[in-house]
Image (tube, rainbow, N blue to C red):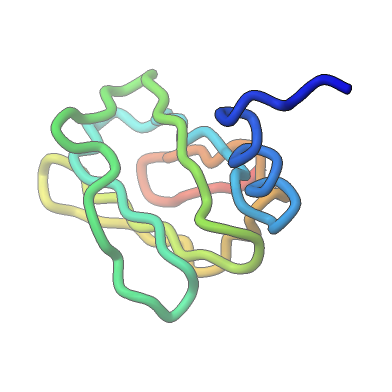
Length: 106
């Protein structure tokens, strides 16, 4: 019987417990997205996922959910305007598109 490499084991545990789901944030707006925050619904925003960079118009940013269930997403454009998506279902949304006035899950 072959032993699993130690690197694979955490990946398998994460998938089995509902972690490790990913989505893509796509900036289809005409403005630079300077900050991106993702948190479980009702929890604090935490760190900026775009730092130290930003997401230019036409650019993308991969996002990883902390686990299954409802999450909230907040983006802040370089001009200080912000948009939020309060109920993003982890593992069900494959792409989140930033438009000029809203966030759209697909």
